Amino acid sequence: MPRGSSDTTVLVFGAGPAGLVLGNILRAAGIDVLILERRDRAHIEQRARAGFLAPASVAVLAEHGLDTGLRAGGHTHQTCEFRSDSARIELSYDELGRGEVHTVYPQQRLVTDLVAEYLRRGGELRCATTAEQIGDEHGDKPWVLARTADGASSRITARYLVGCDGAQGAARRRVRGPRSTHDYAITWLALLAQAPPTTDTVAYGVHPDGFAGQMPRSPEVTRYYLQCAGEDALRWSEDRVWNALSDRLRADRYGPLRTGPIIERGLVRLRSEILDPIQQGRLFLAGDAASTISPSAAKGANLAILTARSLAAALIAAIVDGDESALRAHSADCVPRIRRAHEFSHWMIGLLHPPTGPHAGFERELQQARLHSLATSRPHQDFFAENYVGI
Image (tube, rainbow, N blue to C red; front, side, top):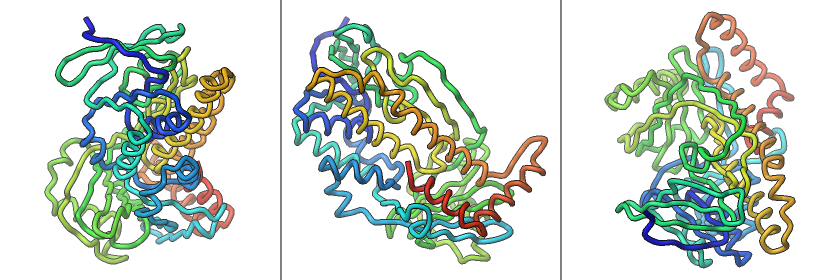
């Protein structure tokens, strides 16, 4: 049985970018917010994740006074390249499409900023606390059973519940409705290296042995991705990792990689899922809970920020003005943007990875056609830039 109970206006599960942006905006409007986070604070403030923010995300952070650290420590990025057997294609996307750029700011630093500002605004954050069960979301007082790391349980009621707790969280499990899923049967070995990037560009290696990618994070640290067969790659020696990266990024042709100690490794399974609706009664989803998207085009954190901004505005209208029309339209407002992000992510996956299956030879020819078009067609380059940076 629960040992205690409490009540709040908006109860949020998950202290990632979605939950923290939402909490900060609501607190600025004077709304009571409680955020539950299953990890401890040190973990979420040190967890390395994506670092490429789209202009729309930067604008949201600036509009709501959440960009102090970003302005001081972020830097713009505007060039990517594709390396294949046939060519090296370099695209300066600040000169293409809408002329927009990314802002590079590691997600753990953004989360640290957002946590500090949320607490400064008077928000309540309970770390090492997991939302386990949800009930009565169609009523006036939905509730959650939560459990702390030491086993203590509590019952929390709220006017509205928001799930920002990821694909495996209680909120995603609770919302029923159609789900469209695609498992690409592709796994990446995700690496952080204590080494400067070889170039200032994001580099995509399109190689018959599998994809490799270099994503600059800072002058001292570089994110690398390496397509692999499975968990055995976690045990690869550093020499084997660097040799594979060098081969697939064609270091013999474009210059040697700047190597260093590998300070983090993990596996990423490329899997996508689109939900519609992303709400049920007084329970709403945002961030990774609303959509699982592959990391192939750096859309996840940006979708989280934008869906959180949209949902915050709808909650403020409901709580302050008594108008729930925007809340009722949460799915209709957000799902089209989610679909567009998935479409481009899917396109990138097809561009970057060696085809498999009975039609692999034919699909390799089409892959070469896409790369050639990206190298030679200004309309294709504009399409790429608009979708690569936009969200």
